[in-house]
Amino acid sequence: MIKISERLATIARRVLPGGTMADIGTDHAYLPVYLVEQNKCPRAIASDIHEGPYLTARELVHLYRMEDRISVRCGDGLRVLVPGEADTLVIAGIGGSTIIKILEASPDVATSAKRLVLQPMEDIFRLRAWLVTQGWRLVDEDLVMEGDRYYVILVAEPGRSPSLGEMELEVGPVLMAGRHPLLYGYLDRLVKELKRVIRELTKSSREESREKKEALQGKVKELEKVMAWLSSASE
Image (cartoon, rainbow, N blue to C red; front, side, top):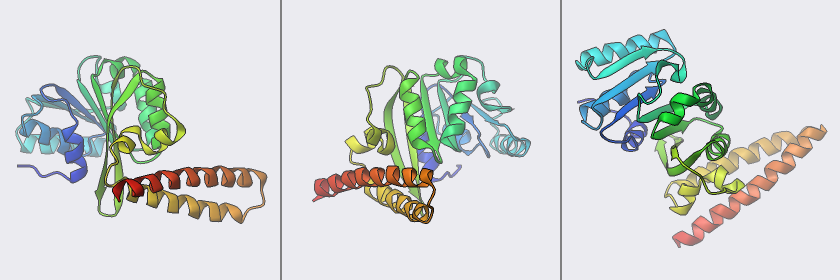
C-alpha cells in the first residue's frame, strides 16, 4: 500500500469519488496511485510538463501495475486533456498565478470539470479572487501543516459565488466560517512576515515604498482583527 503525506491525503479527501481525476503537475504520481488503490477513483490521469517527473510517474504506475487505470502523460497544463475527460482537476504545489494561467489557457477543459482541488504555494488571494469572478464558487477550504509550513487547499465547483470582501479573499471564507483550528497560527505567521516586509520598506525613502508600507500596515490591522475574533471565539 502506498503511503502519502498529510497534505496529499487532505487533497485526496476532496476528490470526487467514482469519477476520473487528473493530477496536473503530478511529479511522482503518488496521488493518482493512492486514489486508484483506495478504489476512490476507477481511473486517473497523471501529467507533468517535465520529462523527468513524467518518467518517474510512469515507473511508479508500472510498479503498482496500474497502466490500465492510470494514464501518464507529458504535456503543458490542461492541454493533455480533452473536455469532459476528468471530473476532478487537481493542481497542487505551484503558485496561484501559475494555476490561473493553466486554467485560463484551457477554458474548455477547465469548465467541463465538476470540481477543482487546488493547493497554491503563494498568490492565494489572487487565486481566490480569480475563481469567484470566473464562474467558480468556493465549496470547501482546508489548512494543513507539514513540518513547519502551512498549506492552503481550495475546492471550487462551477456556480455563482457570493461577493467576497478583501479579508475573506485574504483569509478564506470557509476557513473563517468554520474557525479552522490552524487558522490563528497561519495568520500569526502571515502577520509576522508582513511586519518584516514593512520594516524593510521603512528603510526606503521612495514614494512607492511608502505607499506599499501603508497598504501593508492596513492589511496587518485587519488581519489582527480576525485573529482577535478567533481568540475570543476559543475562550
